[in-house]
Structures are given as C-alpha cells and as structure tokens.
Amino acid sequence: MKALITRKVGMTSTIAEDGVMQAITLLSASPCVITQVKTVEKDGYTAVQLGAETGKNINKAQQGHFKAAGVMPKIVREFRVDEITEDLKVGESIDPEVFSVGDVVHVTGTSKGKGWAGTIRRHNFHRGRKTHGGRSYRRPGSIGSMYPQRIFKGKKMAGQLGDEQVTVRNLKVAMVDRELGVIGVVGAVPGPRHGIIILKGAN
Image (cartoon, rainbow, N blue to C red; front, side):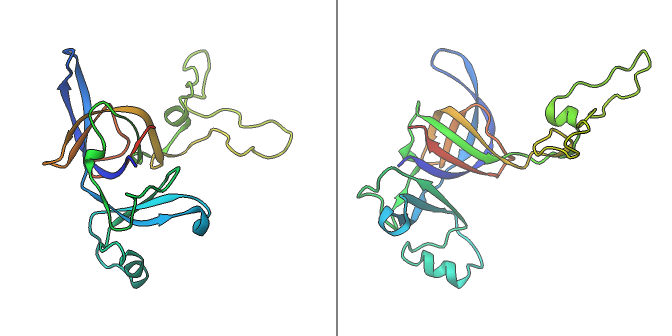
C-alpha cells in the first residue's frame, strides 16, 4: 500500500537529469502506523487506517481504539484498498521508502483560506465597462429572471474562497530522503506550510 500522512515543509528547486530546473515541494514524512484494518465481512468495505505523529489529551475511547497499535497518534486518516494483504496488520508501520523516485502520486490537502471574495476573484467574472455610462463595475449582474422566483443552488456568487479539500493528481516523486524524513514532489501542493498533506500512489 503506497500511502502516507505528511506535512508540507516548503518549496525549493532542483536540476533534473536532463538539465532542466524544476520546482519541488518538500514534505515531512515520518513513518505511519496502521491503527485499524477494515474488511468486507466486518465493515462492508476494505480499508486501512493510518496514524501519524503523537497526540495529546487522547480521550479514553480513542485510547481503547489505538491500544492494539501501541501508539497514540495525533492525525488519523483512512485509505481504501482493493484487498488486505498479509503485511497490512495493526501495529505495522509504513515508511517513506514505499515511494521511490519517479513514482506518480496523488496529493490531497486543504487549500489556503482567502476569506470572503467577490465573483471576479472567485469565479473569474469580467468586470463591467467603465466608459459610455457604465456604472456596474464589479457587481455580479443578473442572478435570475422572474421564473421560478428563486435562485438555483450552485449559482456562482460571492462567497468563501479557499479552505477546501483539493487533490492534485499525477505528480512525480523527485526525491526520497529517509534520514531527514523528507519526500520531494515535483510541482505545487495545496495548503500552507505545516499543513497536513495526504500522499497516495496513483496506481
């Protein structure tokens, strides 16, 4: 299973083998521990629950849940798998070395919150003309006609921008450093520094 819970460190650049400079995002990747294995017979689907880092003030329900794994993680995420293999057991750890240079991965994170934004910034609307008597510059314009006397759901309007889950697909792994616990991914990754990033193999 190729999956890890990481944190975004920042961005830098490297020179590829063909001499092209490429931007990479550095992810802090420590070993993740399997805290639960879900099966079709018991849970209705197959999945593996991973825990990362060490949490504080763990309540008794969580302590009982994590007791079999021998850890008290701060971050817990679940990953769907096609089948449960023998190496996927509670208490086993998944190291950053499951990824190697050249692997294609999907990266999931929470984008930066931009606050309340208008339609021009949020949906790339055009502004109104500022000449020939135009007096509507950054307004959204008409949002509906007479019928059906309501606004349809999903209408593009001003609202909260950012702070939502974003997945960037098919990024390549540029470097894996086990000593430093760092994985480098070519390209940009959603979210601020120190944000939680889910790394998952594309296959």
